[in-house]
Length: 108
Image 1: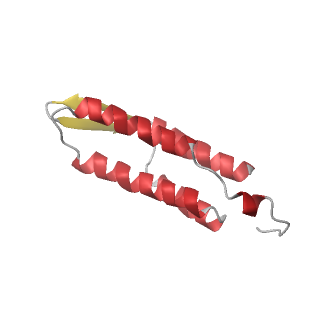
Image 2: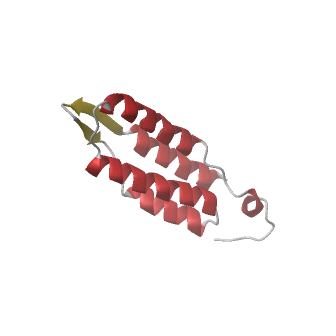
């Protein structure tokens, strides 16, 4: 459970490290942490047998990547604020696979 919480906190820190501003019809992103780390964290969750959370982190990574490289809109700031809030909500709602956590089987 502690390792799961550590990974969830790392995901939150990466997402909270994303800043953005609107410049004409484009959003400029300022990223404090390496977002490719989300891919590695997703892989860790798969290895720990938390597939739903791993899928969510992988989806977040893909979506964030798409926004950073391709996002243009007329009302970009308003839309981006909603999307950013959704990313935060998703990482806070990550849940472990309790069957694995409460299993009597030891794993490394």
